[in-house]
Length: 347
Image (cartoon, rainbow, N blue to C red; front, side, top):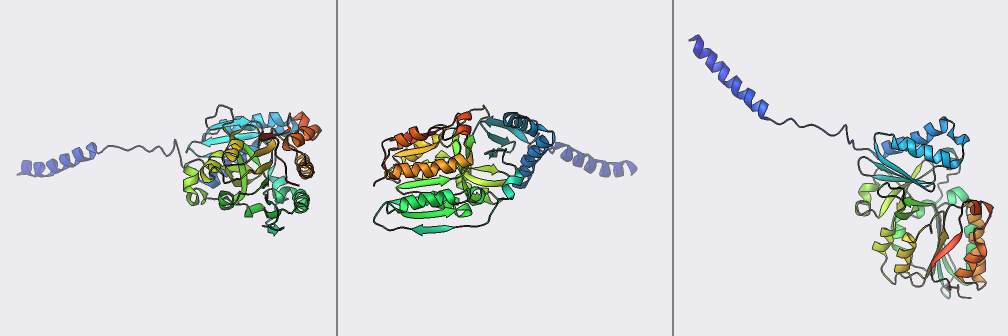
């Protein structure tokens, strides 16, 4: 009787033990490749800048600071690679997302002290002349004087002008409203190193729209197709568009014989962005080949449009301006163009 009782108890237990031992144990990769939130990524990026600054690297030259910052990011377990090209650092996190620091030398303090929340949209002029779109993304940092002077010059030539600043220059606006005889952007730009080989694969240009935790969802199509990336200026993330964005949303002829002037560092470092604007119908694309000081960029932008309005060609203007100043000469930077150098503003 006792043996039968043991069998009744043991057989179900052995069967249950076999079932449990047959269930595969699933190991999680969460510790190896955690999903990083946007806030976590920002914290890592800002921590790197803080740590490198606290180690007195700011007493060294800017290049040494950038190299030290790149090394710090490459040592972080949540970062797949960090690649320094010029002053831009592309950071690829282990979850596959990328962020570009346009210029880490713009410290958090210098950015937030000058941040304004103003959003401006102004239209002026008439329909008898050409059209101009003036996008002052960096107004919160550098003001609006240079754009005001450019608009004054164009108004004398009867241009109809649409002016936007700061957050009003969002991705939706960039997607549909760049068709004009003149397109001028005062913004930030950097390189996108896709594979970490320290070679720039594309120029990317910042909009005024902040990158939030909802950006990847709100712009899922653009994000998944690498039409946009996250750009960091100071301590703030912005949506930046890649050449693929222009290629997708602007067909040949959408920019009828336009003059595109990108008043930002490195916008003309290579032809990646310029070629997409030209393929969409622009006559010529103008920008800086390397880094530029903001005051040089401001003065040169005003001078360039005054010369153009006086009848000079784009080629002549770029040749006359050259580096634009001593510091740009040190940076080996100069104002250059892609496309038709004989382009003129109608007088």
